Length: 283
Image (cartoon, rainbow, N blue to C red; front, side, top):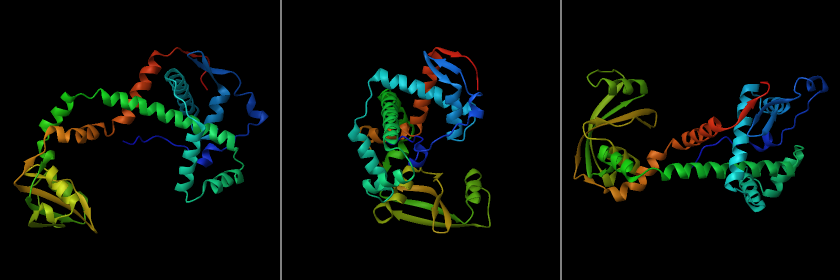
C-alpha cells in the first residue's frame, strides 16, 4: 500500500530565505497559538515566501505541522540516523548517483547537510505518523464490509475459461463513452466486430478485464495502439467463483484505495476541532 504524500525535493529542502529589514516590521509578533505552541507572523511570511504560497495557505500548513509534531511526540515516533542515511541513499539511486556524489551535489548548491538531514528526519517522522493513522483506519474495516462488497460484486471474483464478446474500436474515446451510455446509438468512427477468447490464450490483463466485467455489460475502455477499445461481454464459459476467503485480501486492498488521504485528512480535522487555538493576528 502506498501513500501518496507531498514530498519536498532536495532543492526545495535546501532553499534559503533572506528577509530584508524593510519587511521585518510587517512580520513581528504572534499570529496564533495552538495548544500553547505559537506560530509567528514571521513563520507565516517565511513559509509563504519559501514555497510561493499565500499567507493563508502557509498558515494552514503550519497549523497542520504543529498538530503533526504534537502527535509524533505523543505516539513516541522516532527516526534513527541510519534511516535518514538509507533514505538519502535511495534518493541518490533515483537520481542515478552514488550517495557520495549526491551529497557533493547538495553542497555545491550551498545546502547545509545537517539542516537537510534534520528536515528529512522530520519528513520520515511524518511518514510514520501517516502510516499509523492509515493502518488504524484499515483495521476498522471489518469482515461485514468486505463480505458485503463480495456479495454485491460476484462478477469480479469469477474466472471463466472463455468469453463471447462484441468488440468496439475507435480512435475517439468520447464516441465509446457515448455508446456505453446509449447502446442503441451508432457512430461512424466506431468499428464493431464479434469475437471469442479463451482465457489461457489471451493477455492476462485482458482476461482479468473480461472476468471482472459482468455478463451483458460493457467493460471499461482501454487503450490499444492508436485506438481505444471497449468490450461487451455476451457470455462467459465455465465461470467459477473464487471463495470469499481467497478474495478477502484483494477486497481489502481495493476498498482501501483512495481512503488513505481521506483517513489522514479526517484524523487531523478531528484533532484541529478539539485543539485549543487562540488567534492573535491573522497574517
